[in-house]
Image (cartoon, rainbow, N blue to C red):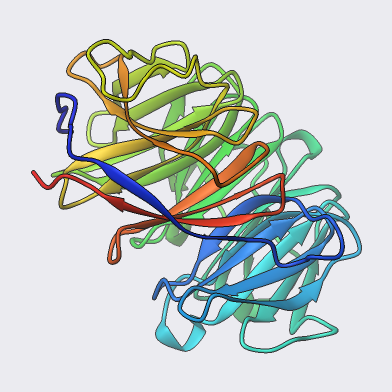
Length: 340
């Protein structure tokens, strides 16, 4: 992974900031983007599944769960399924939707022991992690019977699941482990095991990126951020929110960040960028300094959110970052990154 000195040529502009519900308060925790990047869906505490047209800047309500949403995701895979959405709720329901239409009932539904924490869908496979003793269900939609319970992967609540392009299922949990399984080798979990990473702390979120070789980043609930080389499983970054240096920086010190939001990798800039937030809604875009444990702020993102920012997603094609938070706002930031 390329480590860079502080970059001076970073600019950010708030292009859009609005809430889908002007009458009632809303709060968002997660965001997912379609493969084309033209639309996003949001995970709301009200249970409403909101879809946002990035081109038309228009909100629409797709469907609703009876309880708060815990995760949402667009279906990964073929173009024919690009508009399909999956969502899960704290009541244990897993619903399938078509993002192009308003629906009073889901296209299909599944059930897990409540509360459901996270969900992923790729082609014919669905995975859902839930709170009960590291429970992780896996379904093959072509033969929809009882789910396969992947109970050996984790000992505590599963926090995120993700399918990879090459057919692996990666999961994280509050036990601090990240596990990768070959889905083609299931149901034998021992035979299917690809790798296990132990961060030593409950994992809040993780993601994958490629920088000459595959890497994985993760954020823990104790506000530590890790990056791992997936070829060797070596740690390439281990940092805490206190490890943000403002020395020699044109972004004036605004105090320590309170939490990490998410990460994204820009292939043209050849850098991993990290979103750090403050409780008042202020955001800082950070990157890794030459010292693997030090982060430097590149630009401040302000005048958007007024409360904790819960998630962000990067659109590499148009160089924009969309953020959602507890204030119920959706903000789109145009960020001009320096090209290496």
